[in-house]
Image 1 (spheres, helix red, strand yellow):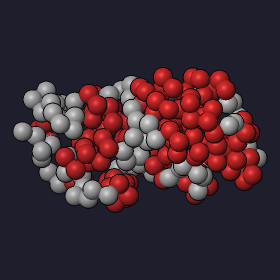
Image 2 (spheres, helix red, strand yellow):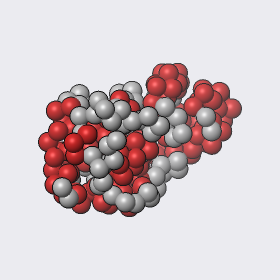
Image 3 (cartoon, helix red, strand yellow):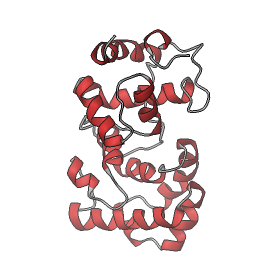
Length: 209
């Protein structure tokens, strides 16, 4: 089975295995998702979801993120790690939204990726889940690991992995592909102890033990 054949089989199986796969960050609008995704760097979604209610209550608009005191923001996001830098980025992101976009979250990859604390991965998360736009594939640690184990790529660089996945899978599946692979990575194909014996993809996985 070559890469294209394996990708086609994955596209058939993954939606059946994980029909409810979705973004596991809690949000109600694009700004909240942007904030949650910035906080998710080097942090679990579960911890972010425990942190964001207080942040969302305190800051409801880009203007309020721009105006909040650094120490106050640090206190709220401390448990997510790297809190000084994250607090600084959230405040700068709020200022950039006000100055460049009238306080609204932009809907293009270029504009999103140019915001403080936001790169291509975060921009893809927001575009795919808040605006239903498939501009790219979110390559986090799970997606990167599974892409290699499933023989979809030999690269370790997230940008190169994303380019490979975009060639192998149809555009309308890009956002869901990330969700499916992340769900599989969290529930079956862990970094240290993959459950190969119970894996639904064992027969087509070149890394299966």
